Image (tube, rainbow, N blue to C red; front, side, top):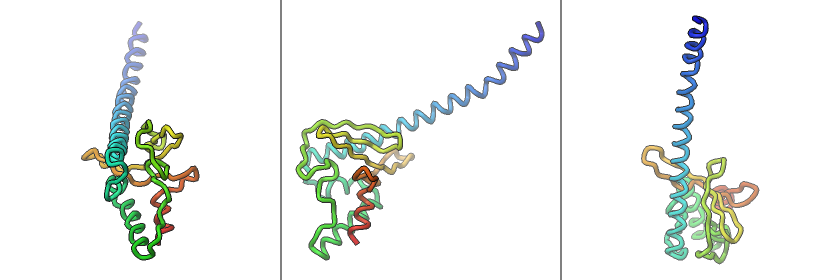
Length: 163
């Protein structure tokens, strides 16, 4: 009988750290889920503002939600236009993937495996947003927008085209 007691004791002691590891993984999952919720809330709010203003926000709603790097790229676009009187921007509304947005269409917001916010529009388009977030004050800003299947981004387009 003493062998069984010591075996049980060793098994119990051996399993204790595993319990702590499971608890730590759970905390990581909770933190990731909380950040995903904040990212989705940010993009949802941006779309709602664009719907409320019917795309007439000035500066454009995307610029209001953009981080410093994306704002700088968007400023290049304005400087290019001021200098040349021609546009170097994308020829459609990036938020709606359309030249004539339907602000009433249904939208679905989700997080991809890469941590991007995916907006699936009823018209069949998916738009992907990369966000930069501050863990301390739980805020996020749009860092970039993926424009097409080749993973070309809005910031990349502006930096290459508007120089």
